[in-house]
Amino acid sequence: MTSLLGQLKKLAESTLGSGNLNAAVKLPEGERLEEWIAVHTVDFFNHLNILYGTITEFCTQRECPVMCAGPRFEYHWQDSNSTKYRRSTRLSAPDYIECLLNWTQAQIDDPQLFPITPEAPFPPNFIDRVKMILRRIFRVYAHMYNHHFAQMCALRLEVHLNTSYRHFLLFVNEYRLIDPKEMIPLAELNEAILDDN
Image (tube, rainbow, N blue to C red):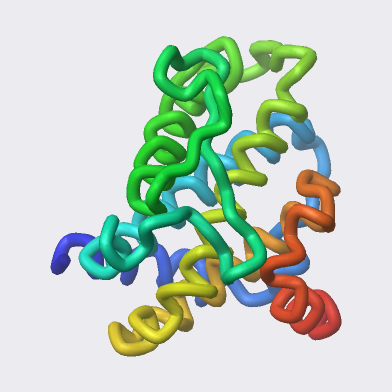
């Protein structure tokens, strides 16, 4: 837990002190949009991984037998490249999130999707693939807010969660990377964040 809290402290220092998050999501002049989206996608994944890591002792098969965001939103795992999950499969939250984290890491590590060399072309389906990554990342935020927010508060991590999610929301909203219907589980929070800007 200590190393996770240390990582979270570094995360907080890099984001909490960044000032205006509205300005932070704007594409800098001369930057390629795909590159900008790629960098942010990797950052959002890393932030989420650290945040979720702080509550894994609470997000267990027993406490979270289904991956959901409140009583109305249940998420099933599917990966067409997997033999085990070719069809939509109901999983516990920790199993779903483990699949998601492993799947996302594999996407990010794929140099065909996330080119390593500067000026290398992004594939034509890059934005569509990133949209799927970000939609799935949102589901973990929605689960944490709906099922683990009290624990985040008890650990005094709510500011980190809120800042991370606010940055994520402003970014996906700026570039229309997630359909608003997908974000209904956090609609009230989203509205408050967007109205505040």
